[in-house]
Image (cartoon, rainbow, N blue to C red):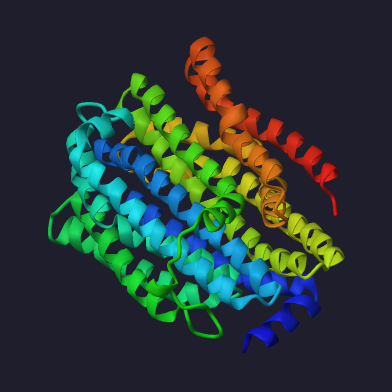
Length: 441
């Protein structure tokens, strides 16, 4: 399919069909990416509580790398989507390479600082002295794979926002399958322990990086070429406009992870492990939601760029309905089977299981609201309502959650920590409703 045929398809076919067509490979990509964390948590949970907790500590770093990568991936990808909708291919090509190579350079620099300041960084992230040895073993391999992890995130978003999510899915799935095979081999057969989990993740992401780099230019996609790397204030301003909501949202995820780890560490390694396990479970559930929302984004971007605003509105309403039904089903399942789900990732520690089940239930009490919240943020982001998108992006984890967490921990101890998330979801939902009414097309 050439770019003209793609334009015709994106602007004439029924929006519900298009959203579903792009959502399926996007959901697979997001679920597979989240599967890296779930698989690591499952196998590492068989080692000891400190190793499980170490995954939660290092996740804060992973969230930072994901924030930077999504910033450049979404920022450049959203511009690419609109440029292709307006049939400005040369501008799209320059933006793709500028966003990709800048992300690689910046995340490599972050990894270098991580190597130089490993123990202070892990302590800042909430590591206790008993968790530190396990965290260092895992962290060194995640730092090694950082440029490849970042590159995969950027290419995935650029390919998806060009309407080539199925191509991206292939590279991500091959890496995930390799990770599933290498985890038990390295952790148990070769007896490398938690370092084996980090090694498996790094190697798998390297393989995905190479495959996606070879495939990104296929099916009318835009190739990444160093000669098209043309940094400028104007291009970075466009990246900021399209990517800042993702940057803020993901950075807040890192901040929240750090704060939760530090508060939980007051109650021991089992508490850190419990929040780590629930965090991975909810991330996996949310991966499908984000993947479905990402199916909405290219439809929104193309049609907004083409001036077909009624199609944008129809796509938004359809996507909200489907995502809300999904979130409600997840919430019910999480409440009913909370203890069984948590026990899959911590077979030996009853304290982790009981506390983790309670935390999971509280997350699920408000999870049904997240479909509307996520789709609202994506709608505002792709229609270039930057300030509104930033407000919604910061609300759930920053504007509401962090103050609720601090107050709850101070006055209500563990109960306050656990209750902060559902209260934040309710307040963010109200804000999202206001924003949609304000910026309705």
